[in-house]
Image (tube, rainbow, N blue to C red):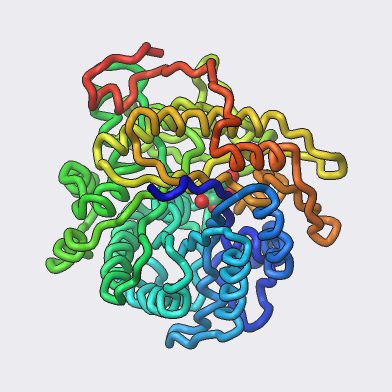
Length: 485
Ligand code: BGP
């Protein structure tokens, strides 16, 4: 049995900075944020210059793995596939530094920062982006395949595509259901083709995909709610999990898309074979919160998410016309200032749902809590310790109940740039003083997590508050009934 991995995670655009150094070209995020004069990640946590210190802190913090992503714009600088040796050298140094410190590198190939030269050609709406992505994969497997044992093709295609093409709060910032379906499909095709390439190149590690997991719960056990839950599960989870793990898209999802007016002619005949033959070795689940569903009642689609924190607390609202409504205002539930519910039991049940449905190795590739913090003082982040404790407890319980969970990654290694939320939403185990040359200061949770890692989880206190509320997909699968809301 391989050892359980205890780690933390980041993403290139969110932590590296050095946005125009050593030959890096702009990604779609650089262009979008600059053009709209929004807070950007030009400097971010300046990981590009602090990586040695950060990896040393991981090691001293007891961590045994580091999940990070590659900035495509740093390693391939034009649409003809020109390789930037300085970009390759940077990741070479990061990987070497990890290995020197006994940290297992876990590399995400794409964590949302598509080069702008590809976005200009249509980005993920264009089938040829799949080929450009495969070219990137070929370079990475060739250069780093002997050192990196764990690869994720994509981070959260669901979150990326829906935010960029449906909600429109991320670049390319459009609201178009047709484009959402098309970009989603091409990303999943790219996932299957990258797996095919990985095996063709006779790589010896494991390759999977990372999904933004939202375990589905319903407000009651009526047949309307159950149907809405199924549609929401397809919308949030199954269009990624099914093709990635089973090699096939859910039939009722495709039917629903057609009846919602989506033209699926972008699907080509030979694709289905590629999906079937190239499924993942493991699934990475990022868990922040569950999704609570009620049947769709009336009105147009509404997609408002809170990227403003406490000034907009309670403003989140999601209604997908003819599909479902998502609730953000449960009585007795606890929410962060960004309307994210804190519900560790959703992770326990969510893991078991994936385990029972797919029976596949699982990594919890992100989990954490974003809050406002004042870094001028030592950070006594007891709330984060409680949050992480209760979620790790959920994982340990799911393992006891048979799930094959192989690793856990706190989001995030250090404070970083939280996309549209900027840098004031902090997740790190280590504080970054963005006004003072990005100096680092471990928080109380960092020292606590060291004890968890060193004791292989024995430090975790059993969470006695958990209770399932609402009817979960797990209970539907098992034919049980949870307590209703
Ligand atoms: C996940 C992303 C991360 C990270 C995290 C927290 O969806 O993979 O990149 O940002 O969520 O989200 P946010 O930064 O929006 O609070």
